[in-house]
Amino acid sequence: MSAPNYRTATLIGSSAILMWGSLALFTTQTGAVPPFLLSTLAFGISTSLIVVKWLAYRENVIKHLQQPPRAWIVGVTGLFGYHFFYFMALRHAPPVNAGLIAYMWPLLIVLFSTLLPGEKLRWFHLVGAIFGLAGAAILITGGVALPGFQTDFMFGYFMAICCALTWSIYSVANRRFGEVPTAAVGGFCAATAILSALCHLGFETTIWPVGTRQWLAVFGLGLFPVGMAFFTWDYGTKHGDIRVLGALAYAAPLISTTLLIISGQGEATWAVGLGCLMIVGGAVLASSEVLFARED
Image 1 (tube, rainbow, N blue to C red):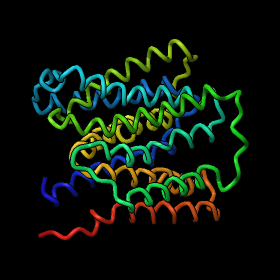
Image 2 (cartoon, helix red, strand yellow; image 1 turned 135 degrees about the vertical axis):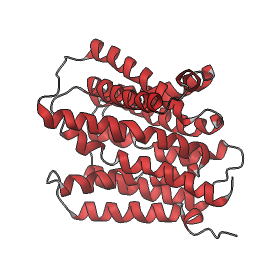
Image 3 (tube, helix red, strand yellow; image 1 turned 30 degrees about the vertical axis):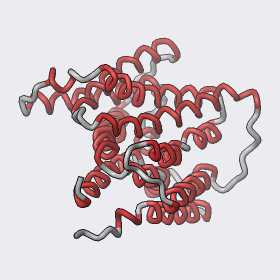
Image 4 (cartoon, rainbow, N blue to C red; image 1 turned 180 degrees about the horizontal axis):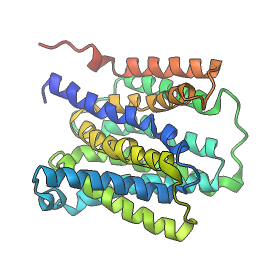
């Protein structure tokens, strides 16, 4: 792929990170809706929207869904598996600790990308990802030392590790399915909605969104961070620089924190400033090869 197209695909993939940055803001507006039900509703909305698009443009829906079994296994495992392990980790371990472990996936993407043909890990990719991880840790913890990892929560921590491994392996393995159209993600979203509904019935008590504001927040989730984001991430990981995307992914907590502060649900502190600087610096360093590449 030519350099300009390579960069374009990377930029398209990075738009997913922007949308994931709005995840916390939308989620805080959904009230007491339990996570698996929220996942069911959001993925159901994203599936409905892509089906409407297919029908409006008279696209061949069967062709979009008729993909190799391996593609379905990888796609559904990535989308549903990530959310399943993440929600289970939060149920069985302190949320901050579990969240930090789960958010190792960008660094793992950078490391696992070396297994792909034609990909070479450079020092600035690794250092940039480590800076991003450190910055994300400062943002998530507020610069406060965490309590020790207690053995009582080992199952939750194990779920968080599975979460990080699932999304990083999916993102890297997705590169091998370049012939599978991004439209197929609509089918993966539908399967994720169904599996999430089954988990909701098995693990949760039903609490529906209340009022227009909460339903709009659910719709926003289905449209952006749990909708279009997975389509643009699919395109980016298949055709862009996956090492850069992995490092840039640490911008999600930065965007999330910024949006929460702007909306009055967060506070600007020294930890926020330091975390932001480390994430931005790490992202620029990791993506310097793409950002400053010369076009011949």
